[in-house]
Image (cartoon, rainbow, N blue to C red; front, top):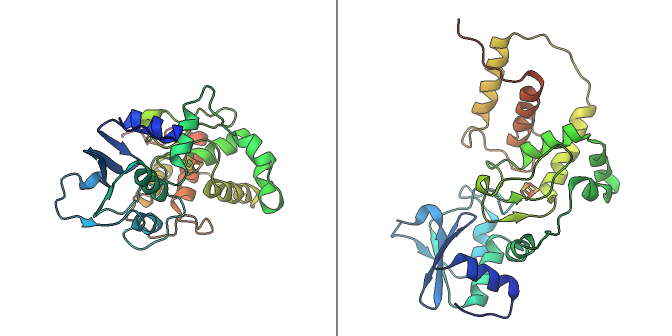
Amino acid sequence: MVEVANPALNAFLTRMGEESVYGQVLIQREGDTWRLRHVEDRANETLKPVGIQDLRMIAQFTSQGAFRPLKSAPNLQSGWHAFARNAAELEAALNHLYPGSIADNFAAQQNPPPVTHYREFTNRQTGMYRITQMLNDEQAGRMIQACCHPQFCLKQRFWTVEGLSPDKAAEKSALSCLEPCAVLLEFARKAMRIEQAEVKNLSISIENLETINESLRYALEPSAENIREADFGVPLNPRRIGLVLEKLNQTFGTTKAEEK
Ligand code: SF4
């Protein structure tokens, strides 16, 4: 084991051993160096070599060139590999790919971890984000489930709101989330605006409800629409679709029509 002065990095190196998957990055020890690549590139022999500094730009954009506002989103581009020649370079590489994650990971191992829950976090908000305090527990829980779904974020959510459990480690990755992020805060603002909007009542058959439900699930498929991740003004934004699905499922329960 390589001993380094940084206790967070030291703990990380102890846990990872000879090989580890961190978010979507496969890290393999090769003598005194570490090789990093996308986990889906494990068997790819034609990877482009990149420097540690290049990883910052790789983390900024998807393979389609869209900006990644959330670096823990499961859309890291593949096709590259990088070598860290020492522990400091490995730390720099991971901080480019998943900023601040080694320190957060270390903090998450403390007992208890330094978590900031939804109410504590939003009670500090002023200006345009003060409105996020107005979501009740049920609304906030629904919004959080839609926003932090494994389809959108690989971080294990340690923080909660009343009535909602933290993420289970097996559902996410080794990345830790200790407090709501900027994307969630923006989504919470939009969710409250949606709650405040005019309501129209609708009687709907189980069959039609099933069609709506299935259509929303289809629209959630990654290839269905190319919409900027944090553009919550677009009704087809995947997190907004997820929010509607959460509400439908909580309001009506299972929406599968009975077979005739
Ligand atoms: S708040 Fe949710 S979406 Fe944001 S980093 Fe944490 S788990 Fe991911």
